[in-house]
Every structure is written in C-alpha cells, then in structure tokens.
Amino acid sequence: MKSLIAFLALAVMVGVPVALQAAGPSVPLDAVKVDVTNEASLQRGARLYFNYCMGCHSAQYMRYSRVGRDLGLTENQVIHSMIFTTDEDGELVNPGSLITNAMTADYGEEAFGVEPPDLTLVARVRGEDWLYTFLRGFYRDNSRPLGVNNIVFDNVGMPHPLWELQGWQEKHLDANGVSRLRVVEPGRMSGPEYDRAIRDLVTFLSYLAEPMQVERQRIGVYVMLFLIVFLGLAYLLKKEYWKDVH
Ligand code: HEC
Image (cartoon, rainbow, N blue to C red; front, top):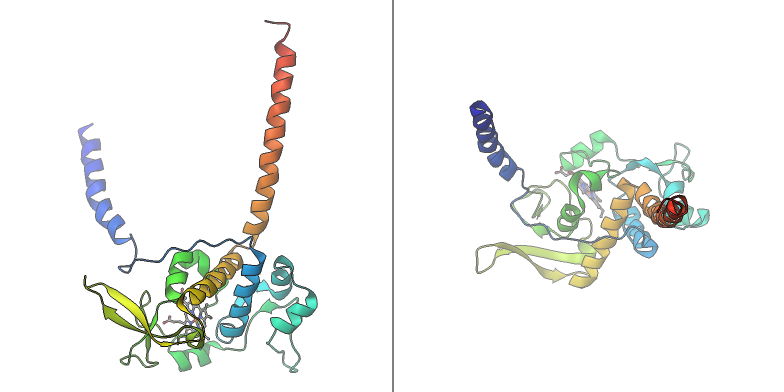
C-alpha cells in the first residue's frame, strides 16, 4: 500500500509539470466555431484555398472530384474554379486527380528555406483554433528575410498569403504588457470581414482533414431517430409480454 502511495505521488510530481508544459503555446488562441455542414461557407473557403494557397501547398490525399461532390459543385464548376494544375502536356489535370501542385521540395526549400507542407490533414494536426489564430496572426517584422512573422508560429517561413485582403499588421505591447496586433495598413477587407473569410477557410481545411464528418453528422441524426422509434417499440413489446404476469 505504501509503495502504491509513493508511486502515485511520484507520478503526480512528474506528471504535473509535463502536463503544464504541454498545455499549449504562450499566446492564447482565438476560438472559432466552424460548421462543416454549411455548404456556402465551405465553398467560400475552398475558393480562398484554391486561389491563395494551392500555389505552394498541395492537398494530395484528396481528389478534386470528391471536393466538388461534397461541396455541391458541378463538374464544370470544379474544372473552372478549382483546377489550375497542368500535366506534362500542359493540359489541365482531370477532376479525378489528386490535389497536387507543381511546387517541388527542392524549389520550396530554396525559396522559403523549408518545403511548404501538404495541408490535407493540417486541421487534425494543429486544430481549428490554432489555424484561425495563425492565419490572422501575420505581422511585419523587418528582422525576418520575408519581412513578416507570425504571432503563433515564431520565425515562420511562409509569406503572408492574404495581405491584400487583411492589409498589414504590426505588433505592439498593450498596457498590461501583452503582445497585440493592430492593422496599420488596411487591406481590401475590414477586420470582421477578414475574420469571417478565415473562418470559411478553416471550415474548408477542417472538412479536408476529415471529409466523413459531414456524412457522419447526417447519419447520426438517422441513428438517433431509429433508436427513439425502437425504444417505443421495445416498450410496447415489454408491456405486451408482461401484461398476463401482473
Ligand atoms: C508562397 C508560398 C506559400 C503560400 C502561397 C502559402 N503558404 Fe502556407 N506555408 C508556406 C511555407 C514555406 C510554410 C512552412 C513554414 C515553416 O515551417 O516555417 C507554410 C506553412 C503553413 C502552415 C503551417 C503548417 C504546419 O503545421 O507547420 C499552414 C497551416 C499554412 N502554411 C497554411 C496556408 C494557407 C491556408 C495558405 C493560403 C491562404 C497558405 N498557407 C499559403 C508557404 C506558403
């Protein structure tokens, strides 16, 4: 018994600091609520992804046709609004293809010092709040090679892909000594508009990482309905079986 107590005490002593360390980044993340069943939001997010991210990042575990089907787009819309990648003959790749791009690992490393990672699963790895804070967290920093840094990803190798929309932010300390970002050069969108656009983009990334979640929620409703009906039937049956006993 004594050794068990000693063991538990040790586990707490070792475990608590580890748990605290793993509690997350020092910058608090902004929470976002995404709704992957909102088709319009998914479509707007996909448009941002294919226009602003695909040049550097692939989503090579997903096919264009699947995205099109899940987002309620026709094949023509998929071809005209999502596919910019060409094959060796210079033809647009077909909608059944995986979502790859022409960026090679060598080129990525040469240009940015690090290869832009594939984004298919990034929402699972980083979480939605992190992505939401990251994509709104770029600020000017002249000590960096690209002149830009990020509040949750220090010394990031990625340029700010959406500066035209958000404008440029700078970091300053508020009265409590906490780092805050402030837009110093406005972009095409206002602050709330940009936040909404990023929510759409994170919604799309969340769908991309787990496309079944849309289907799963729909099936879940039917399962619950079935269980409720079945409960009613089971109750009636029970009454029928026991009516002669009582
Ligand atoms: C000009 C090329 C370029 C464009 C365009 C670009 N990125 Fe990146 N991105 C990078 C590079 C390079 C990195 C790696 C940064 C590092 O590790 O320091 C990166 C990293 C990331 C990461 C962090 C991944 C991780 O888990 O470490 C995310 C998320 C991301 N990009 C999302 C996006 C999104 C969303 C867009 C479109 C709005 C976008 N990127 C557009 C080059 C780009």
